[in-house]
Image (tube, rainbow, N blue to C red; front, side, top):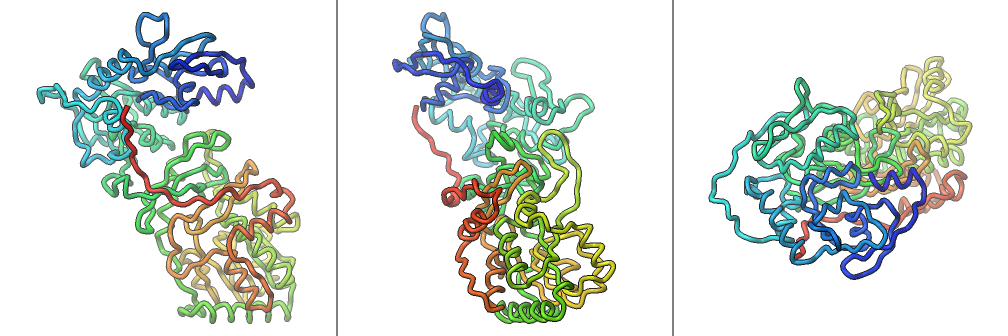
Length: 527
């Protein structure tokens, strides 16, 4: 939050402070904790989060300031000129250990069965700053376990360390005060506000910010250990906002999506609906080419598509249409746009996609397609709308249609003599198609989406494509070769580079460095 305020208010004056004997210069208004992070000095914390206000309730980030009578919370205290900060004195280390011991006093030691094990701040700080046997005689305050807070969240009140992060997410991000603290002292506990349930559209962010395993997602609960997951950076396909995410997968199965920080797009958050888009990746997939409804080899299916398209083109080019989907990547869209203009020689190119849905003023867009902006830029000013497609199908102008991806507007089909569909899922279009080719989904291929802000953002393949499905750009290249063209695309980056050169508003886009999946590890360093 401090970083967001700085961006909004412009450059700040600089202050010089000394941290652990070394002089540094920082913008005025930065907190001591943020200053320490900028220069690589580790100060532990629980309640602080970069996207939320700082209540200074956990007292784990205490530091010494020369001239002050006692340690102060670094997450709450702004830097000041000529300030001298000490983060590693015996006094500071001892008070941190004492605060950690208080936090652990009534905490259940159930790491072997806790979903947060491996990514738990309490676990990390114990190994970093304490590693001592508990002095508790075994008598602990008991609280409720498996508390059903809402449709997505379960609470273990014994694990809660009362940091209030989840309350601030509801208040400051979702703008719905669903959670509160009740009672006082060692009987204090997290609960829902009177008459409320934790059912706001951003409720799963409370699981992300929870530093321990108090709040767990019903969808992920007990399904996988954190250290067995591989994290891949990507972009949420749920709407045009394009929230940056990490795909957490194991054995080619996606287990969860979590937000990846991007101050310009989604900050640290994403909506609950977007988190669950991964489920469709594993449901009702088209996994092999179909010709006349029967499984076929790729070579035979591509040869049949080339024959059907050549026949339609030569017989009546004005009755041949190509449908692009705003659900697909820039690379797929560019390859099929090129195929339509250079080889099918049709100007009947349509843009369709998913219907509009609910939206809010926080993150969620009414446009439920992740790449509408990219599709419009690549399709150009002559691309026709979904309404045009429905009208042309209704009056019978179209006799042959090549459809890339999902498109709600492809109906009625009665007037079509030839229908070729590239689809990721089974459905009415696949059933009606002369040829259906299996299309890889967003989590199975490299590429880019262009969000509603015009930002070109990178997708990385996190899992292997389902069955025999392939990326759209690759299918377009193979189809072009089957029609006699000499297309040589070897990977998505080559398609992206060509699109960047030819689509003016993509000229500044950057493919970025290659990203490999990273196994989630809990690295402990001794303090």
